[in-house]
Image (tube, rainbow, N blue to C red; front, side, top):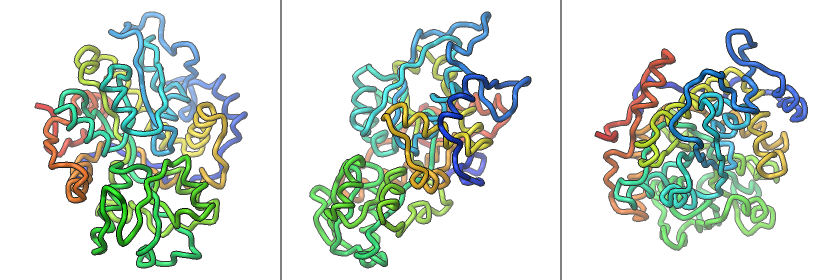
Length: 377
């Protein structure tokens, strides 16, 4: 598991009902951040958030991808509060929202995306398919936030899953791999390609899963937040939190990746983004209620609808934001995918480049993090 010298902040502290979104948005217009500002209020960066004499960076814009999931809390809050933009000295952020890992990897490989927040499985697949040429993992972002939610009328114990239909977001995605491994450790058999076997693994888009659950076409789902809490709000019951399966109660659910071309040509921009994500994680930890409301405001801006309190309130504290990429857990998840015969044994040497992150952490007086021997040479 990861070295003990890690930077991690937690959303598990004293979460209460979030401030109303209109109040939050109004507050953002007048708040400050710095030595003369309240410590729990980020600076408004509606324009650029840049000092007049600040040194310009080497790129005029940076294209950043993320998912509209609470497991991408660093991206949601960092963009909403301007904490990433504040570090960019006039370089503009062009945010892009994705619903699946393969499409984000395709955008990165195709040159239309520079930096992305993404899960470990698509990171591994993207790295391997490009023969290690197109991406690097440059930071962690989140751990946890994945649950097995079931229909309590049909499933009361874990053994009751046998013969039932359980959804995962996509074949070979991070949750799918974890669930297939769990099934294997139970001694049950499932064909990883078709999903058929002792348990029927039904690959279903997270946007569709709640309706499928309400209609009874699935009996449960192994899914990330906020989908898990949406199912609970529709009568589901949490049967298992994936965090409980990991020795240190931590596992990577979201990384930050970068195009190797962009990293080579614009390391100053990448470093600035990482300064922003580290400060974002610090702010989330110091202000859990405001951070929860901020993430919800960003989701509302992106989708046109905020999450109900009955969904976001239980979902939020199950997610741990962390600068640590938890590299050893990515290796474990890769081994699970190999075991399920979803991928061949990959060569992950060089998938991480934590040089800039550790530079930022050191400058902030924080301990450096480990790449578990999988760093670029």
